[in-house]
Length: 242
Length: 198
Image 1 (tube, chains in turn orange, green):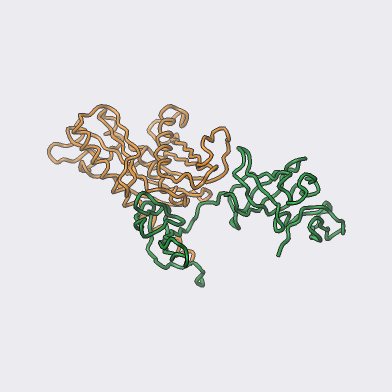
Image 2 (image 1 turned 90 degrees about the horizontal axis):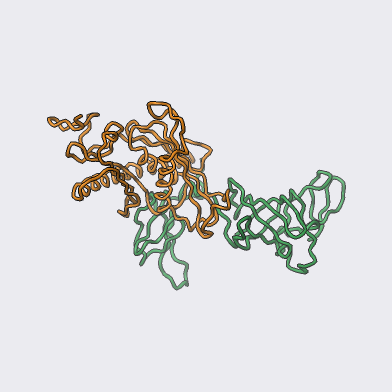
């Protein structure tokens, strides 16, 4: 199947190879949570809620007394994909993604400012169309910033692939299931540091560098957008407060 | 709405990770952190520069980021907390910490007052039942992060102890000395470790 039209250069959904899907974010969607956000990348919609810092519920999980414990749970809603999912959480993929998101966010949160407490991040995929991992990390960053939890930097994530000899930015579900390589990158935007790098399938080394570079550019663009959303939200709250 | 004490001097808004300045000229205050040579913001909010205290040997200004939503307070050693007593036992009392440094917290933390931390004098002759009863509101200071189960609290100062309590008859207890409180309905005297409120 041709994922990139050789004549026009368009992809299956009409985008160019280095074009990202439309981003949309909303902060403060779950009123009861300390911080929450809704993040959309094209048709992929995820919602994140952050509770904390609060007292550790399960003392057995606490490893380090001087730092906060970060917990993360990734779930897909049963209606998020085409066929109704039987097991929305607890399957291997969800457990792996929960771990990945937790490690990515933990690298950014200043945990030693909140010893002996716990921060819970819950992400739920409402609609899945490729790139759910990245959308969840972006939503979690917004929710943590909304909760006022101190972070080193904004963590953003984007995926990129390589189909029909072209690096493609932000794969959707059709392109993702084509069987080509899928590189997911998470970075600390202003500090230019990589906190997450995952790939499936194989790529030669020089191609990998160009695909990863493309994903990092996507991450930086998302970071600019997230910053605007945060500043806009703060202005709105101040205006409401008078 | 009338202008409150919240001022926007300095004004510009920053998001986490933004560079605020150099660590040679600025000290990172609340809402900011130091990374190598640079000082960066850790929350979203307005940047504010606080001039150095006169006479201190570090003449750098402090930069703070004041956000609209600070994350919930976490008890630190030395902070004054308001707690409600939940359980009184022979050698200790359990309490739920509700406010930290005059900021209410959304979800409670568990604290523990040991027999030797109730008061400063004659600590081995303390009777826990004559110091606290379940339901009393006490002001205490956090001694340490404690063990896995609870923070260690202490009321061994004049201004710490029971602030508000209900009598057995259901009326409010009024303090009459540093060990006694009187019910306003029945006049009955009950024993508590009372806080001296100024």
